[in-house]
Length: 106
Length: 393
Ligand SMILES: Cc1cc2nc3c(=O)[nH]c(=O)nc-3n(C[C@H](O)[C@H](O)[C@H](O)COP(=O)(O)OP(=O)(O)OC[C@H]3O[C@@H](n4cnc5c(N)ncnc54)[C@H](O)[C@@H]3O)c2cc1C
Ligand code: FES
Image (tube, rainbow over all chains, first blue to last red):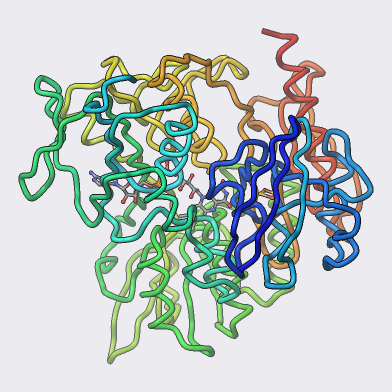
């Protein structure tokens, strides 16, 4: 279990408990948060789950694979700490993770 | 929306249904929501059934579209393992198979499709299977041990995905296809040729342009008899020759159906209190200027949103560009748009390196693209096709 903070583009903050094994994308859609769509269900095909990871946290995550890296290049307004949230699996180590939602998803 | 006695009833508990629920609550629907589904499971993802779930990379928990607590949070009345038998439009009630009546204010038909049955002799034998549900996959996997022989009839996406997943598990795979190439219904020759190569390289015995006469069982062994008389031995067969939309509820209720349940741009049927979304709906596409029925998760999800918003009084035209994906081996295919009536095909990239795109044009405008391990180009094409075609409209 990890508490994850999702910050909407408007600044609205949501602290959500997400169970281990779920992804950061699932934590958002299961709790009906706006700003993450997750159209492909998490198989790294749609790029509608873009988040900007807090830079201190970014380094702690496993590096994105080639598909994810390429897709991140094509999202609207990519940043150096952008990730596809369906590719981040939650574990106890991620307790306290903070992610920001972009202004628009792909 | 104000009356909390109002009830939105959804028939079919899958991709579209989960999204209807989520969007209704987000849009402020305060009435009841009832979900009727004939499978026992809460809505789960079908795409992994032929991919990561089949190959054993993920378990049933990971299939869930929403976590079980979502249905408590959204206060949905769950009626699972129950089949809707008919819709009584005059009384605005759904009649379940056990006779129970459920009244609705608005009804959403999300009944999807079912596998098309193979009309050949012997196809009713227990070793002949179809793959549409998680129960189907569990059943297939329990009858096939590593080293077993799997016969796949039909080289569409599902058949080929299962071929890739099964071979990874040490199963021997034979694929029979009546057409001269794989994926003939959905893609062009260069893409078909590519998939033929990668499956053969992986060890699949792929047979194209072959007729299947019948199935025979001799001394506990199963054989497929081909048109030329050859007998092909197998342990278990999966038929993947397409699907049929589940329109019977709508049809018997007197709603227009033609390759799907006919809906307008707001996913509404001719009865303003009944919507139809997802694989079962036949809808107008402004982009392609014709009626279409799609079999894809993005379509089911986006139509579900349109219906839920319309129920809440917010009518927004549904006009998403169709798109699809398929994962086989280390190859991700992403398709944007519909490849129909094109007059120019352009192949770019490195086919041998398994990284290329095939674009389809009509009158100089891009109408569709297949991207093989080229996700950024897929995303760019999605934008371009929308722009190219909207200029037209
Ligand atoms: C193996 C497989 C792989 C796939 N891969 C992909 C992919 O990679 N990408 C992609 O985009 N799409 C894929 N698809 C297609 C995708 O799964 C469908 O487009 C999607 O499931 C459609 O969702 P739906 O909600 O419209 O209907 P469905 O998922 O078909 O669900 C309809 C539900 O309604 C139930 N039902 C029907 N009639 C009744 C009744 N009278 N009473 C009660 N319940 C009823 C059915 O049993 C079913 O549970 C795949 C499908 C399969 C089977
Ligand atoms: S949910 Fe589709 S790429 Fe993340």
